[in-house]
Image 1 (cartoon, rainbow, N blue to C red):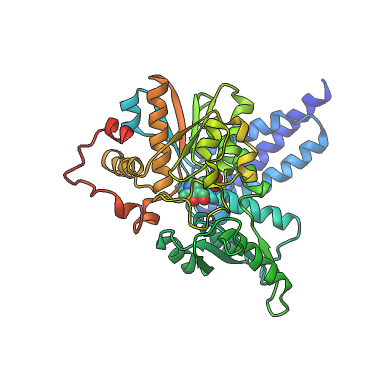
Image 2: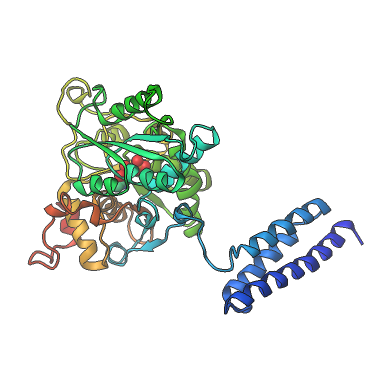
Length: 431
Ligand SMILES: Cc1ncc(COP(=O)(O)O)c(C=O)c1O
């Protein structure tokens, strides 16, 4: 009998013993039942692991890991390890109204269901913190503080995860963002600085200010710990979180069957990370940027020029992005956008009226209550579907809940259930 067969048989036998022992232990503490779907999933998992064993060392190691994971109850129930365990693996939902109208599958990844800060930024914040921990740049409960410039979502994710990991958060944000976001940050115990919107050349611009504050902290003898600038616009940890998380999840959830991915870009981390992963598996998939008013990215993708020279950042001193949409649209090329820039096939411009009407449509027809960037994504996905024609499958993201946009974006939408709720999707797309 060949060696590997003996190991397999021994492994299967020992695995059975471990499995039985672990389940007996669990059964004494709960009403769990061995023939539940969880138990059968667990048994399949064990058999799959055992079938890969072909030497004694691997066998021993696998059995030790298996036993401790069973004792912890992993896989048998669905217990997450802390709030960080509730990040990622978000559902993919088919939006019925948009799919029926277009004859395409319009699928949305429900990123607002990420558990810590309730947006895709949870993935990024966790990735930034984990990378810094790996490099020894953060020490829990030492006073170490993460500084970030954000329109809100990344700050909320960082503030929540910082609490869970023993760090402090200091968030610099423009003062024209919905007040709900700074209120949430304050309730999470973050330090919040709301500053006047300014171009990136201004040292008081919210991202520059966060970088300066982090350096000031590190240099200060009075403050405990160090300051770490999270740097979401430029850090590799951002797009990589989507390359290893959001992208593979979309691929698996669709079984690799999709024609296009649509996304807005704030830092560009989402569109780049997802594009890099999906195009490596599905070279024909189309990557489409959804861009709000005031953003230079649409022109950059369509025509190769960022914006008209008279709009160039630094040549005028007023806030350039004039839109009720928050979180997406930018007038500079960040590293996170640049990483995937060449993979973006096309761009769709979405105006504020279209975004507001789509947000209301999604509530009226699908019971889905989301914020402005999600509405922009859905307008662009629906527009793309009408261009591609029936039978295609398009994936986009629902980034955050409408609850975070009550005072600004939702304050400007027409009343749900009101007299004007007979607007058609055709009217929305042509608004
Ligand atoms: C609500 C919301 N949606 C979308 C995005 C854009 O994501 P990305 O920064 O990955 O381009 C952001 C960015 O801050 C956001 O806050």
